[in-house]
Image (cartoon, rainbow, N blue to C red):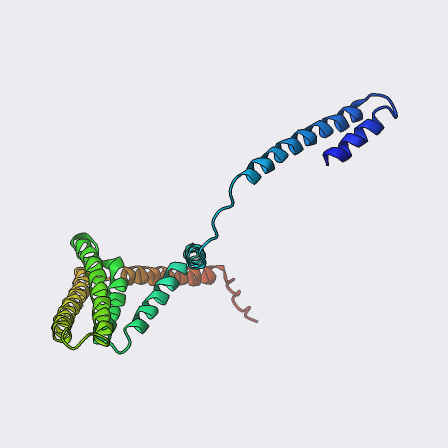
Length: 239
């Protein structure tokens, strides 16, 4: 581009004398020439640097996955979809494990509490935070149980009794934790129910009754106006 504009400036400048167009051609030629020089300097500096090491395919795949997950989470329902995919993948990893049953119960209780969380205000907010921390710990405990079970498949005979005892203790902890979580969800449902019973009449019911009364009064008023506007027929003329 610098060469073409420079040649055009050399040819067109003496063709019809100096003018505004010649200044335009000369300015473009000078600007593109300077830009070409700077880019050439950049190319020489980059050529002098050593080549970067090749990217590990596993690392490149993980980075691409993270970018894809970040892009999907920006969508309105992206975060919910990703959480559901992760939940299903974790459930598949626990297939055939002693932690699969408690995991399913924990999933159902967690979904129930998620539906109630928008109505748990005031003193119940701290309980929701505690439930979130407890749920994370219980899920980690379930994954630990599955890891112990995988280790039991190839463990030497002399180490199996200790692993079996540890596995039994972990399963008991998970069962007790899930039971406590379910009781918390039941208590949260009771709180929401009792909080709704504090008012003898729901505000929506009162608004609907007021709207119905308003419509009845408007209809009655329109009927009265129609009766007033209707002309009264003249009395019959007697022969």
